[in-house]
Image 1 (tube, one colour):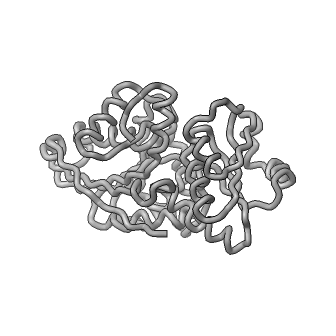
Image 2 (cartoon, rainbow, N blue to C red; image 1 turned 90 degrees about the vertical axis):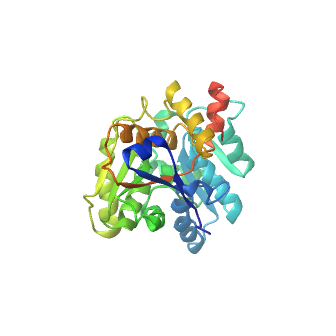
Length: 302
């Protein structure tokens, strides 16, 4: 697995007036289908699955899940049969994400939302093992300690920056970056979930289990969820379109669009002291834009 990515500057009058420099670490370019943080989350898990002589990967996700998409692509590329336990009833025709997963060999198994809530219960896992046979289990979102280990590599370009910004879903990527930075600089996390402050406890648990440390240089910015996970407003879509047209960097509305919207708003508010060097991690997930195009007729670029 290659991990060569580019770090590119963003030039904007707003940034110049505030005396803030902004660079983007283009993790979305690390792989065409297993992109961004999913590459790092899957890396050591796939190695462990191979070492344990597993031939099946089983995981969980919603109908538009980046993790489902990436796991299917990785399974196809590295010779694993993949099984996706999908939250909610099956709807035909399948959306872009699930079509891609199925076309890349993933066996889709739909469960009710009530049953899906039992996904972490050992009894539910035992039922799945009886149904599908022996498999390597990947949690929802791909977050476990091997994923945290993989995500430490995302921090490799952070040494010269005062602030490092990353989107937050389950907290695994941020936990890995915190361990990789090891207390250096300020790490800003932007949860996609409404009331995302609860994730701080989970992040602390992950870093404690991974490296025996809890870091005090982490701050969660929870005011830019636009109504909650996968929710959006017209001004967010307008910002994504403007950003792509101006800087030639595509974003999506679930994670990266919200984080960059927040960054520019924080610059306007004077959040970053003059002279600050800011690095924003582009964590991929651009496949999700296809789903927005299908569901809402939004034509933001991918």
